Amino acid sequence: IGMTERIHQGVEFVKLRDSDLRLKDPEQDVRGLEVYERGGDQIGSVGDLYIDEQERKVRLLEVGAGGFLGMGEKHFLIPAEAIASVGEDGVTIDHSREKVAGYPPFDPDVEPESNYQRALYDYYGYPFPY
Image (cartoon, rainbow, N blue to C red; front, side):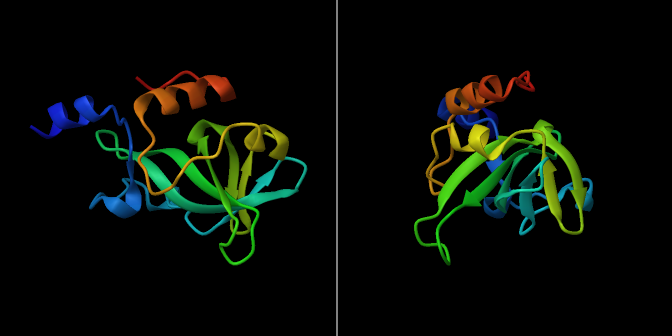
């Protein structure tokens, strides 16, 4: 029944916080880390991760940007394929802050639908995992 519901809802990935999943590789859990573009400018910080339930892999980063103490903050999704490196100081991605800001923000209280996720992958130039 679970799979039928998932396909019906059109949601490919689930938020880690809302699931009881554990990542295969704990190093993939980058929640709370700052996100930087290659030039070193900060974009925001990782609020949560969207996980592929079957593979137990991180597929999307939910990044909060702007605002002050969470007020006025915008939320963006970035495909995990965009990650160039992960270090103690944060996550560096292969795209500019302008690129991230150029995609419509999303409401973190609503699961992004499959069409949104596919369009996001297209926008960043990565093949969708399925």
